[in-house]
Every structure is written in C-alpha cells, then in structure tokens.
Image (cartoon, rainbow, N blue to C red; front, side, top):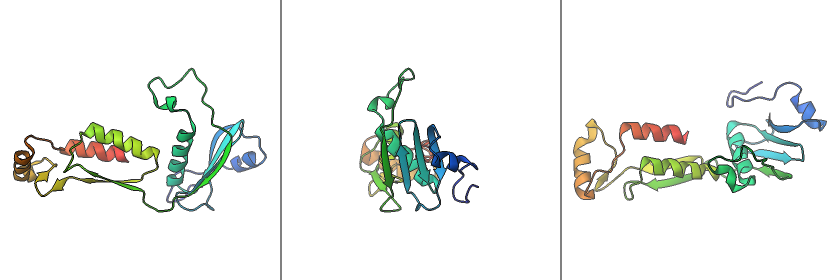
Length: 178
C-alpha cells in the first residue's frame, strides 16, 4: 500500500518474485527500511531491482541509473534501435544532507530562461534537489511586472538594456524545476 509521503507501492507478490530470482527487467520496490532519499540498486544479467522508501529515493536511483548508461542515451534519436545495458552491480546510497543546493546569481549574471532550464537538467543529473535564484541586487532587478515597473526602469538604466524574467518565464522555470 502506498504511503502518505510517496505515491508508489509494491504490488502484492512482487517482492516474492524478486526474492526467488525469477523477476526480469527493471523493477522498483518500496522499502520502508531505507532512510529518506536512500536507495539500493541490484543489477544482474536479466534484472535490475531498485529499492527506495520514498520518491526522493526513486529520483536519486533514476539519476544513478542514467549515469550507468552511455552518454549517447542523452542525445537526439537516443538509440531506439540500440540496446542499452546496465552493468551488473550493487549500489547502496543515501544522501549525506537533506538538501543538495545550487545558487544561481541571475542579478549579477543574467541567463536566459532556456539557459536556466538546461542548467536545471544538468543539476538533476547530479541529484541536486534545490535551486536558489538571486533575482535582485543593489542596482539590478530581474522581475518584470506592473507592481515593479519603477524598479525595472532603474535596473534597465544600470544594465544598459532590458534583461528580465516575466511572470510566464518564472512560472515555466518553476515547473521545469519540479
């Protein structure tokens, strides 16, 4: 049965199939004995069993599985005609800290929304779970909207141009980060 903190569960009988060695393919099991964010991966020739107690553990395990695959898996046309193989291994991992964070100072060094989305994808590969964006500084204001129009004018004067994030940009970045 799925727990309150994570919407995944182990179907009845799946654990016994895993334990007797007859399972094939990639299987995710909920394991309440693991700490939050922790996971284990047991990859054999015909199966790969991932155990985690919560969604953070599942996400961390998926990031590790991606690291085990060749870099070509991230390209365009990522090998639908090729067979990707996860090497045989046993991995047990848990985060040292609850938060793995990056701070991006967009006030001092403007980046487009597309550049930030790309950065979010790179950070996810390394299991970062928090990104802090600095959008204002003494002479710079990166949020454009009617409530802050005077700040935006001053910022554009000091910056020599308009480099802002509108409400749609910020909402899109928020959704990408989730």
